[in-house]
Image (tube, rainbow, N blue to C red; front, side):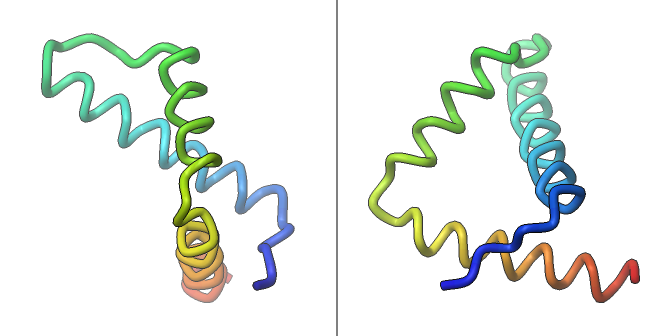
Length: 70
């Protein structure tokens, strides 16, 4: 598996992830997710058994984003 190494795209993906967490949190009780909540979720994602599949998905999304946006 090849990881996508473009820092700008990685930042975009991370910000999208944070926005999704914030939207989910807002729909529950109208509170904004904290940095620690996002960091905890990120650590959970890094430790899970399907991490390789997730990284492959992120690479695919990053490649799609690059192709769409130039």
